[in-house]
Image (cartoon, rainbow over all chains, first blue to last red; front, side):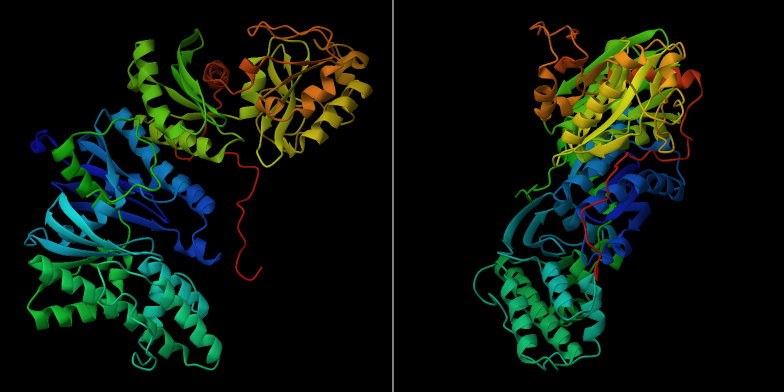
Amino acid sequence: MSDCLTYGPILGIETSCDETAAAVVVNGCEVLSSVVSSQADVHALYGGVVPEIAGRAHLERIIPVVSRAISEARISEHEITAVAATVGPGLVGALLVGVSTAKALSLAWGVPFVAVNHLEAHLQATFLDEPDIELPVVVMLVSGGHTFLVFMEDRLRYKVLGTTVDDAAGEAFDKVARILGLGYPGGPAIDRSSREGEASAITFPRPMFTDGWNFSFSGLKTAVATYMRHHPGAVLEDVAASFQEAVVDVIIAKALNAVSVYGAKGLCLTGGVAANSRLREVARDLCEHKKVAVHLPSLAMCTDNAAMIAATGWWRLKADGPSPLTIGAEPSLPLVV
Amino acid sequence: MLILAITSSTKRVGCAIGDSNGVRSVVQATRDRSHAELLASQISTACDQAGVDLRDVGAVAVDVGPGLYTGLRVGVTTANALAYALKVPTITANSVEIVAFGVRHTRRLIVTVIDAKRGEVFWAVYQWAMYGLQRLSELKVAKPGQVVSEIKHLLESGGFAGGSPAKSASRVDNSLTALSSDYFAGGSPAKSASRAEVLLVGDGVIEYPVFTTAFASQRITKTTDNDRIVATSRVEIADKGFSYPSAEALALYASDLAARQQFVDAEQQVRPLYLRTPDARRLGT
């Protein structure tokens, strides 16, 4: 175990999907800067993330983004004590850019490189806003690519209770948004549209509502598609709101059930879908009702960012020390229990 | 000026450290899909072997392809990050010219053919002249069969038709077209127009049997010595060892470019030479 006091500011780099991000974080919690350059506008033209376009965009943007993160942190690059980067999971051509950049900077500056698991970083994101969350907690990670229900006993010790058996929660939002013609990315589009709709208009199924800790969103998406075929004149806002309500119900029900079964002190929501306004509203209301502490990260910490990578890098350096330079991109890296 | 050269556009990934006095160290590997895992530690080893600190490097030279997207992404990203962190300029060269430079000591026309995947190759024609490597044709993507026809045409006509001589230090410049046949009469080190000879090199030649099939009849003898270039007919195929852009060749080539101040602006990010647009359809198209 290396001495945590030897690590000052850590540069974090994130390029797993369509956000090129860099951040400087001190002591695993104090964010000096966090720069995110989103490619969403580029991919929107194609109705989804195009891996090759993402890889090319990361390559062009990464150094300007790193440079901005260092200048916004108001430090000199000589003060950086380690470079952390997401090595997986994600798109291989996108990950390679961040991993290669981090290793090159680590060589040039003569500081350690530390490999970070993107999923573990999402679990840590909430703590950047609230460093003193009382453990253990249940963390519900819901994003475009991932759905994980996790029981966190300690910052680096956790148990995956459940995951999705088919589509990720965010994927369901994207697919339903496409069915409804609401555009890409689907999460914000459905969130917006739902505000004008009636959530109780249509009763969509609540898949795997009670059985086990796993999730399934594919059937719900099909139910929306079937409904639209049979009701071509349906009010889109009502369909969007009803679909969203079904997803929110399942997520919150399972998460709260886990809190009670595992005796957790609170519930954290994290990942891009945790930015959904209805999910946040229901989580707040139900947790208050059940006297469970609820931790909702800021929107900037929900979506992909590099501050969570730098923070996780700090924790991993403390626990495991630097990573070897022979680590490459690991597109299917699991969330290790 | 000490140069760190990085090549990663083919199955080969590697780096070399050198200057105008020669190459001090080379570390490279030729295997599949491990560019990201290998390159950083190769750089570290190359520095150790050369007995230099990475911070002594005065410029980073990089192979910008065309070639494997994954490999290029690793090499070009690494070069950009090192140049940024070390505050040094970059020097770029394309994969096809690096391969040509690797076999430069010949009077033959050098036809470099790099595997572009999907049944295609990247290719161009070069010649080694007194003042350096000259590109005689545009760098293009083509089917291997087309390249074979063009080479046959070249042999029959004895050279290129029309156009003006390309400038030296072949930067990628699509305005450069072809070489006039009177180039050959103009006291060049090449054979006379009627006796153009070709040295065929590159991993595309290994990948597509059409090249060996087409030109095998031209071979008189075949050596089994892996270290020697077969040099017995009008179209010779270079040994497999010369097929990939080598970091050693790039380090030497980049030293020439550095002497001529051919640097990429420090503020500018080097981008790979893709020569193809991504396979994706915009909505509504």
